[in-house]
Image (tube, rainbow, N blue to C red):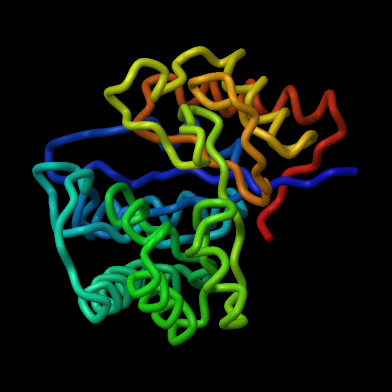
Length: 249
């Protein structure tokens, strides 16, 4: 039986601004990546999302970002490795505190948006992220087959190679820009087909039609995707039909 972790980026509402349908998605996933306040989220949202995860037996993860609330953490900023370390530790510490208060623990760290993509192939930023996860005793979720993954493995830090059901891929195995045609997959059937190919056959078809090898250990759906609950339900149905179990690593 194959096994996959199904994770979702969540807790991205803040103040009067509401994003996502976390309550509808949470029952269908095994890991939650909770925004830490720098691209979305606020203290109350972190608390309620952590509580929701605990109630559903979902692993709690921190989802740190560049300090870019107005740009939703998707704009590239030049930062040093030390700044990467500080950003991750500071933000993950907030989620860890709420997890402890709820009688649980911080399970993993998965960076958000531009910070995630910047670290994927930058050795200095990757090493800083890995050091932060090691110091916090958390595992990392990073892009499958990336430099970030290799550096975590060499450092002995528990790491999961991440693939995406609702994003298009480049020929190099990186995520295609969101504003590029096909960069976002909005059809649940297409998302399911892509997920099954990655899990069962170890490849994803890029936007140009090339088969790109991937190692699927954790599969992401985005909580800000309007169809996230439908995607989650469709994936779980498909996994049940194919005898693929779902669980946090």
